[in-house]
Image (cartoon, rainbow, N blue to C red; front, side, top):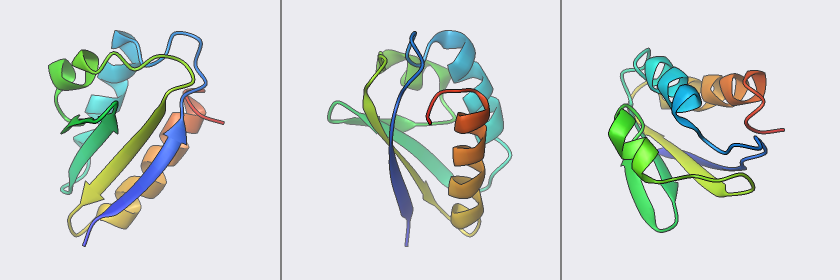
Length: 89
């Protein structure tokens, strides 16, 4: 069973390469499969090129999905990380 949460991006530059790099490193701390969805496409959140290829702008709605034994922790910690980076409110 997977866990998914949707967020609205509030960073003026959207998910730019520097933020994506931080999120990918963070995703590597979890054993769960973690993906990000935007605009009808879903990519592995551990793939820099995949996430950057989504071109996620400011005010976009994204969904982060975690699937695995630490999925609840992954979602919880990702939300904290996104807030700390001022990507979401």
